[in-house]
Length: 396
Image (cartoon, rainbow, N blue to C red):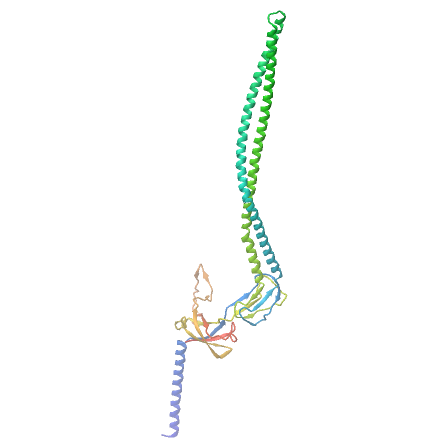
């Protein structure tokens, strides 16, 4: 065989080997890509929060800077605390004033307890005195009635004696009666007159006793009212103490709120983080709920990788993933699949009466839908990871 034929045969075999090697390599790549899905449609994610004050006031300290790294507990900013210090002192003063009032009122109650006992005893004595004076009034009224009857009887006896005397005196001139009989009639008149005057005096005395008894009854009644008023006043002091003690929780809540507002003047980092989107300076006025800047949580980093639906049979929760950042392809980071998305918004986005509205169209080429896969990075480098950075992921 000539050298030319030998070279031609060697070239033919070389082409066959190269083509076969290329086919085998392509098959290996296809199989590896199928078994170990990969995508460059991935981006870095992390949790982030907007830092907003819970109180309002002028910023007096702002030690952080935009894009700076802060440790947990580092001061982010401080609001002028003077107004809140005044509010706390006022709340504490109101609370102390209430306690002093309660102490003073308890002292009064200690004295009023004895006053209540005395007032109860006085009420009982006054009620007894009222009943006694009522009995005395009734007895005095009865005495007045008896005295009035005696007066009426004495007056009738006197009138009879006078009439008898007037009948006898004309008969004396005619000597139908004796002088002695006339003298006896005069004596009877004088005795009857004395009895009448005595009965009138007894009536006046009985009426005076009746008036005195009624006065004592009125005094006893007034004493009952006064004693009951003193008893009510003593009980009212106890009611006032209950009212004051019911104010305690409200004032304690005001103190706690004032102390909490004062603590909120200093805002510290809740975790290790990066400061971003900061556009304020010292002297700015902070408003409640208005975001000052954003903190990116540097403790955990994720990659959201969008995989075609046909690759999901090789992706499972817990699967190991190799992650490469587009800006640092030489570094490999280890990740693990945490979860996979179960829904994406359809391209047409049409929903009719709660059911999908599928258009009747024919497409010759069907594109696979991509679903997001959440991958937790196990060995992140916070200095290299940034939210939104492009990444390449390979499921192992």
